[in-house]
Length: 449
Ligand code: GBH
Image: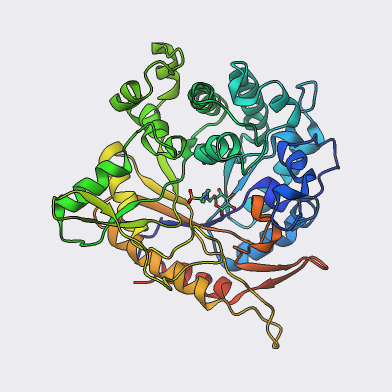
């Protein structure tokens, strides 16, 4: 059992669920543009309709109440809140106020992500995170939305998965805006993104009484294949926080989290990227490392490691037929929710909240009209067991399932389903899957163990 105030929640993000892209003065986002090129999305779909949550939010909140979550994590669409003259758009703002009021009526605490990837196209055209002025735009946007939500929301996450924004959006280019950066540009964009985080923390503190603030990177922990081998675990820990000039450099943990929690980039950053590093001032680092309350982390999977005969760390291949979800990176590695929090706590010493964890399945409506997704329930239970185990030794405060319902899975489109609630995209019908009831039960029992 988790303790009484452990947070059980679910997560969503604006572009993935809201639909209604052309209403109430919403401006175009980089994802609207990215989806116009059908080759960018696995099934050629987009976020125009999806779950229609912009119109159906009352129904969604009822489902959340039935599920029994104490917190709902969702993101604000910058495109609804700020217009192209960089002025507040009251109609868009009202939607989020209404949503929060509805949640509070049911005793569900809103947990608000300020930025979950849907940048206004016009800001992207000015250079996005590469433009130094992004920090001012981000400050203004955060100021407007936090003033509007003051009295309704206490808990904020500044930015979701900075790695995906930069690595996927500007290196692998599989995500919007799909504009390739040179390494030098990338390091500057990372620095500007971190400054956006810092200025958002300051702004939230200024506008919200009794706020909690966090930052939500993602990671894929290195798991010792032998859990009793201390030396192996130590090497896995070091690998997890490694900062190296290698193909996946913009995806790593320490390059984002060291500046936020420890006040500077890792030492190796300055060695590895010599000659490519942007201008970094003491003031920048102070801004970036404003004290925050939680380490949020999105964790879905991991990799096993062992030591070879020379005691070097080696990554193990998954055996043929290894359990996995219906998306290529989603191997079922429950120990990720043990070692991820453990490593993060050891290094940064702040309470941990898992802001996303969930499973992607080929769900179908069965003959009986229900959706029987036992694999998803099994995944959630296995991962929660590990999280509960680690909560005995590190300070873990919460867990959010990704996601409340099936939604627009970015470049995988509508083909990939992560929801506890099934969406029938022909008519928008919602069907609570078996995992919805399983998770409801877990919440009622305060855990699996
Ligand atoms: C999260 O991203 C997002 O926050 C959320 O919006 C999304 O819908 C959800 O999870 C499900 O995908 O580097 O080889 O692992 C998930 C993180 C980022 C994991 C990109 C896979 C690329 C392949 N994903 N990453 S790999």
